[in-house]
Image (cartoon, rainbow, N blue to C red; front, top):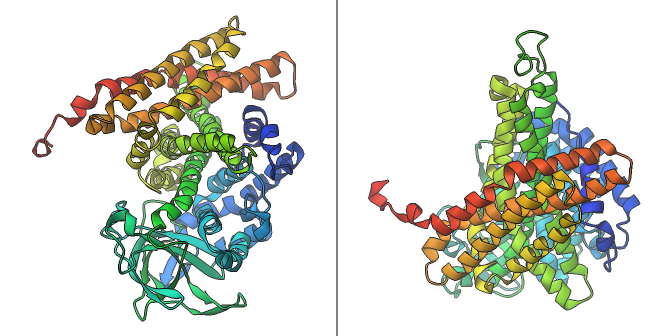
Length: 598
């Protein structure tokens, strides 16, 4: 099997040249993120991903996690790697230095997160959820809760989870039934949660569960949900671990993929009640949980980027080694490796172009988040928060949907060998499949984009982003004599026009015909993904052209970037017109049939 190699050249290009690291490192609190530090950090992270995590991926998939008497044992090698991960401080990169973090910006941690997930997604899910718990407690927890839990969570000595889903509720959190009964300074939690990733394991000393539940007098629906900290082991006043709490794993799921990551059914309060501590105010749990969920949505989108890149790397290596057939049109001569065949090159170019665009979108969203968190001007913070909120469902929804298609192309390039587990290509397809379901399905992300992020604010942030995209045209016009950039300019201009028309239609239609609008929600999300990717690839093409003109080092990289951007604009951006047609003209055909006609 091939070995994962972090795409450091492209990562450095995206964070330093495309997004602009100097703008991020000029923010208060981000000054340490210098180019030299980022280069060194990415190099070391790449070594860790390749040397420590990648060797766990295949064995973890084959062996999986196991459950015995309520104890989940991680796949062989996982606990040791987790200890190394924590000792090196990888889980603390973007966390607050007050609690032991390194305070680096999210544009950096997004790239290391991609490495962890590409090397071994099952492993990476554990520290990702811990980081989400850190974000929620830091923003909404009391000073006492922060002091008690955050240093141990940031260090990785304790792990964190997110407990939302219940058997009868699924994604509908208004149907949550888990009970929280007040008793003195705490609550007693009773209920069952399902699909809890890394809900029980033997890698950390303690597990801090963040649990949604209802107090006795809570109103119905989502307005009656509260958030509670429920530790696996109770914590004494001095920070030491006390007795085992009344929470246990009763089963783990047998899944299509991510076998190394235990997905648990958690029982709270089977005996006297699990002791939990209220976070913030009662009935504010959904708002508080969204802090964790939005972080997780960004991270799941990055999982999509990671799996796509890993599938691409394996397909490239296989296609350079697999000898089959002669060159197109040749009746004689030696057989060639399949990478010489035009259709294989087409598939590889699609994988490469999509993945590079996806990476750029994820880091751009992370840059908006960094500015929203650190910029000294309140108006600028708010503007970037809105842009981050707009792109979050796009990163989560579009990048994960593409990861499935890219992993599927990887299997296709392997041919019949791709359908055989031992080649490894199939694992990426199996693992990628969960990403469109995690933290809300693609339809949920699309409805969020359509409703909260566009319709409710009459398209203000969406149009601001479109204006920013359109401003690129003046730069492209300056190099109109360059045939590749002229092609990119035409294709990109048409795609932005399709996006603008679709946003206007959605803003006008949503208030009076929400069913018609909803029929086009996923096409709108796909349209945003395709055009956002085209915007960043067009910017990348401009940078690459200038670097080539200036005879900078790494000519092969920049010429490949220019060619990849051209492919994206010729083969992927034209989908914008298709999505626009689905949005503005396709609702009737979606809604025509009655239930009995299916």
